[in-house]
Amino acid sequence: MSTPLLFAFPGNETLAACLAAGLDAELGEFEVRRFPDGESYVRFDSDVTGRPVILLATLVRPDEKVMALLFAAMAARDEGAHSVGLVAPYLSYMRQDRQFRPGEAITSCHFAKILSGAVDWLVTVDPHLHRHSSLSDIYTIPTTAASSAPLLAAWIGDNVKNPFLLGPDEESRQWVAEVARGSGDAPFSVFSKVRHGDRDVVITLPDSIDLSGRTPVLVDDIISTAGTMAEAARLITRQGGRAPVCVAVHGVFAGKAEELLMDAGVARVVTTNTIAHATNAIDITGLLARSTRSMLAP
Image 1 (cartoon, helix red, strand yellow):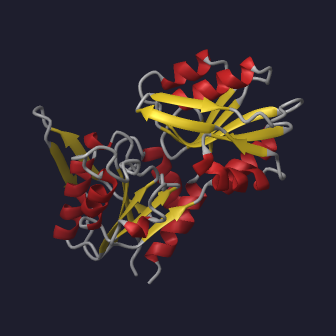
Image 2 (cartoon, rainbow, N blue to C red):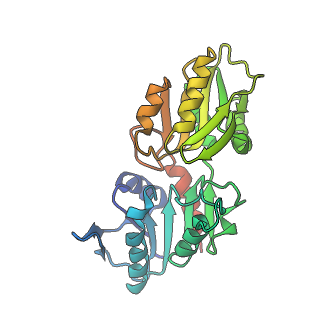
Image 3 (cartoon, one colour):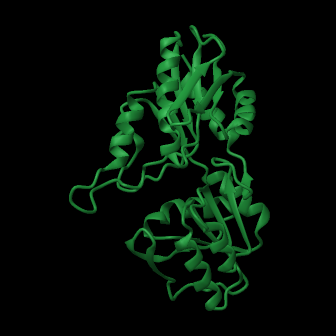
């Protein structure tokens, strides 16, 4: 098989350079921009004929990116690419996994259908699987959902003294337990959470938790509006706990999320580099390279 060509969508250039090195892939050149009326323009400068093409696009704020991504996949096929795969470190449209109100679009399923029709395979990191047991429930192409839990655990073990891990809700228990085991069998628990709307969440801390002498570590897969994490931080400090460290896989930081966390008194916020942000301290490049290499294997 010929050397893969890796194309980075805008904002993914740094990650692309590291990923290309890990894959022994060639960085391709293409142009992605918008016309004044908002329509997308895509043009491949590199010759993709007979080559495996990898499109790297982290899909935070997806509505700004998806049309260009679809056009790129189609153009690569038109130009004779051997195959077209997508590496989306952050995969959007995973949280609406059922109808909460009559008439709602189940966007996780619809988005999966769109991407399955555009690319040959998909690699992502810790997608928000809640009611879907795996990506194969909704995607019809080969997929790999790489787990960053060992990387989060290693960072916590190296950087936090006497950690006590706390997950956002009961659904996170199994994942938080995995991170805790990798952090030297650190103690852990989860909050009780009731969600009344996009920004209306009520959480409580179990009475049995003893944080004496411990550094609370709030662990979650996504920091979006940060409402849940900020309320958790306030709850901990009100009960006499230390200022918590917040660790998440995907730092979406919608609106004033980062400011909200700082106002809540957190000690530090740490994310992986699935989405480029100043809080990135955990590198997922090696994880992506291993997962992508398995997709490229003949």
